[in-house]
Image 1 (tube, rainbow, N blue to C red):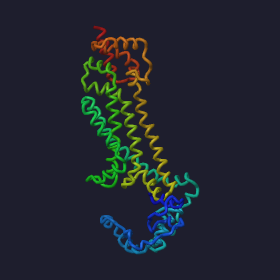
Image 2 (image 1 turned 30 degrees about the horizontal axis):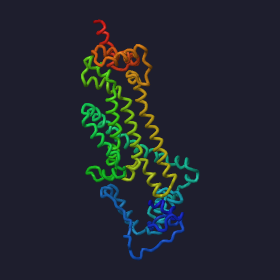
Image 3 (image 1 turned 120 degrees about the vertical axis):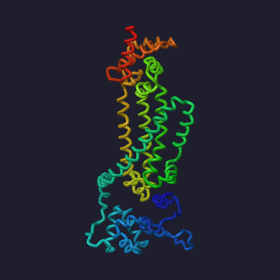
Image 4 (image 1 turned 135 degrees about the vertical axis):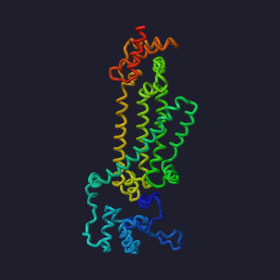
Length: 396
């Protein structure tokens, strides 16, 4: 059980015994009897600063400062400092600054009181006091998500297109992407750390988010292209379009709404999973959530959860705009977004259904009725060429 929740559990008599840190500030809040480890079952836990050598080269004054700080913080002092942060609402920076001033390690600095008044005015005041930090974390969160989803689009869309031509590979590829989707998020993040070249940080988080974003985009790309009306494909072949031209001018425009729905789903999933990236030091809005869980601080948890939820709603609306713009293509295929086809179009479709095999000219004539509604809205080059080709056929 998380240590921040274990204290509440022992206070409510849910548990009787819990292991804890001797420097935990909550020991000063709860009426807890601390048992001495006289048999030395637990290994000693001593804190020591670890600094990179290049950091000391850039800031040589840190060496003297850390040496002066050595052996100044015992368990009782650290417990009080943690209590001021966890229970009194002080910030880490201000509590540490106050301690250094008391120890005389910040000479010439004016004493500053520990700022914790933002907690006394409610959650909105606390969020306002953290606005700059929240914006910075939100930027990191969106950056992780955007890079992962962009990479997923660049990989999944071409694979989904190629699978429509090689349907034998569609089932195993979809199954592999589905297996990746079922791997627990924390387990996948931990696995990415072990890969050479990734390690702790943003690279592992982006790699994990990329794998999670593959399945919705891949599946929707494959489904959207396969569900294009066969009459449109036959008309395109009758007009003399090559397979590449048919894909670019007919299939992809009509599958745009389905593909964008997959991208929207992947974005929403990635925004949620990116919260766990804080466990591997990748930053983002998961930082205040993880810290709040450790400190049992509801306001701090909400300061990360509320912006994360707002960002998910915003990205969902953002990815809905391209789908709305693709309504003319949907109307070309008789979709719900376009205007209802006229009687002549319905009669042509019924006539086409009775004849299983027809010439390309007849197929283009059937499709022309569907494309007329989209022609006024500029549905694309394929519509213009279809209209011109059919007119030439009638003149002959």
